[in-house]
Image 1 (cartoon, rainbow, N blue to C red):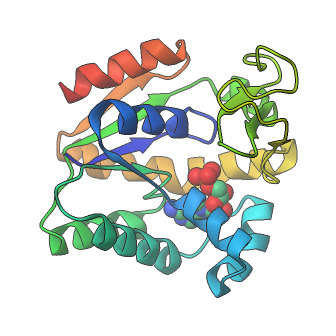
Image 2: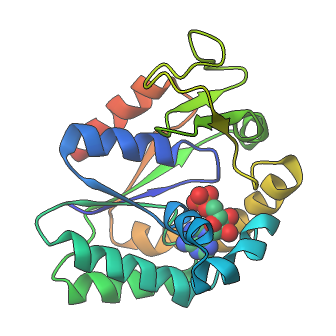
Length: 214
Ligand code: AMP
């Protein structure tokens, strides 16, 4: 099964994708994670993408579609894909159709996480992760049980994404509204869109997504 998680930045796509990986043995394909990896590694793609990402704008369609194609080739056909943060434009949506067809795959569900945009800035600007294992935390909603120590692995270093500041978040929202939200009708016409209330507690969102996939 191949699915897209769609929703504005901070809607919870990454959190839910990680849970789907654990529960259903699917694979999260996050173009944001791939690009951050490329930035860290200092590859030509990373060097090109960094300034664009820091501004909250979109990296070129060709770059992200090539990353997705390469990941699908590497992961094999028997594992379901969770597209997280891709596609983000109409051009990426048609590239994905073409890539999936080439891999003998097709989309089963597009799940839109519906959220109150006013709450997103607080959600995003407060989030941080363990620098060692990547476990997610939040200044207001989910501090580690023991201050400064990761619940999962005991590490004491944490990090924040450079684009999780208010100004960049606002640009990311504008990009979502202008370029990403308009691709929903493409999938609505195919009858594969389901909406899940992303303002619920994380477990409830997961339960609603499971119900769609069942
Ligand atoms: P994300 O982790 O999904 O919030 O993505 C972080 C940043 O990476 C975005 O603000 C964009 O600059 C870039 N990015 C991630 N995925 C895409 C995509 N599918 N198309 C264009 N840019 C992307």
